[in-house]
Image (cartoon, rainbow, N blue to C red):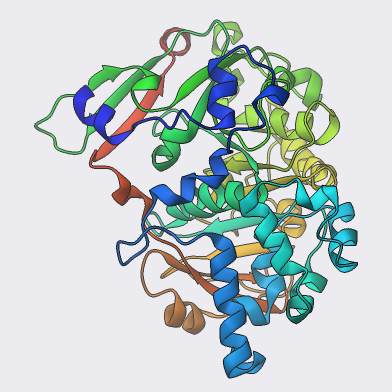
Amino acid sequence: MLDRLHEDFVPWEKSRQARYHATEKSWGRLEQYHNDGERIYKDFSDGDGNSLKPFHKKLKSLERTARISGIENAHPVYRYPSAYLDAIIHVDDAELWALEDGRTDDDILAEQPPTRRKVLNWLAKPENEHVLKAMGDGGTDIWAHSKPGGGKTSFANVIGGIRMPEINNETLLWMLTLDELECLPLAPYMTVAVPKGVDYEVHAKPRNPTLPTTEISLTDVFRDTIEYRNPRDLMTKVVPGGLYAVLPDPQFRGCEKLTQATYTPASEAEEPAEVTPLRDVNFAFMETRAKDDEFLHPTTIVHDEFSDLVPLNPEADENDQNRKVKGYPVSQGKGRKKNLSTMTLSHSVARCDEGVREKTRWFVTMPKTSPPASSLSGIGNVPINMSYVNRFADRTGRAVIWRNRHYAPIEWPNPYRNFEFRGEISVRYPHREEALDAL
């Protein structure tokens, strides 16, 4: 088993981010090394078995088609840039100003990593003026929904974990659930953030029932690990362009202060209903990134099982679920002004809080999944219907992204074909489980 994992998940250790976490050198002294986003897309293949094209070449292809066939026959991604390109190309106000003036030699643009600089230069071309005009500043929010196995996790891996670091030199925080680590395709480039002082076990469980479950180390799969004491502490340890898988802290250190809500570890609870779900640490990470100024570089936080995190009609229970859920769109809005983006994944949109639906601007509807009805409170206008979804999202790896009036079909390759291991990697906290069993 270990040989299989080591063969599948060979860590990429030559980037600036990898060298920073492996050495004592300061971030500034490593600027001669490339970023993970400049390399990661090269390790993945498209549907034809070829390496993924850099995103700036995909953009040039869209532009070329429009030039030859006319804008009315261009791909919807290019024709309606607010539907997709605005969601994944992140620019701030200073960059927009330079681009609008055509000042591509300004330091603010010229000093960007090559993969990002080429995208920004493309935006500045006169023929792409309509795309530049569609760009908003600050963070974005994308909500992907589908039935189980519909492709939302592969979407998050490719668009959130590969394309955004390539395009934006984005820092990625993937908030983990313990039962299955869903970001395995990114593992060779990922640092796992582990709560300091917490005992944990990691297991690899093959899908083949004749093969045993094996206890492994995180670094048998992921590139490296770092420790954090609380959410704010982690914000002092992440770096621009880094990809991080964040294990929740079962002690919830620092969470109550950040959210002004109750967090009760299993070891302190007197009955099961008092125990705070591990996923509630996500609220505290949203708060620290939105309110504290420890780290302001463009950051995307991935929230899986989103309908469990922000359910419809949250209760005012022992864990202040209502306060946490109602506070989420507030921190989301504040965070956007500080270059915080979110990528949320759920089976249902209707079963999530109305305020969260209202705050979200982009939705991605996966194959064989009904888009939400326009009558759903907080959702606004839904410009697509099921017949359109069936037309363009007829298989996994395709979807429709939409916002208000505009929408576009998109597709991405299967990132799980990058490795042979078929199974699950999970984490357990033995002391937490013992405390739960004792209740």
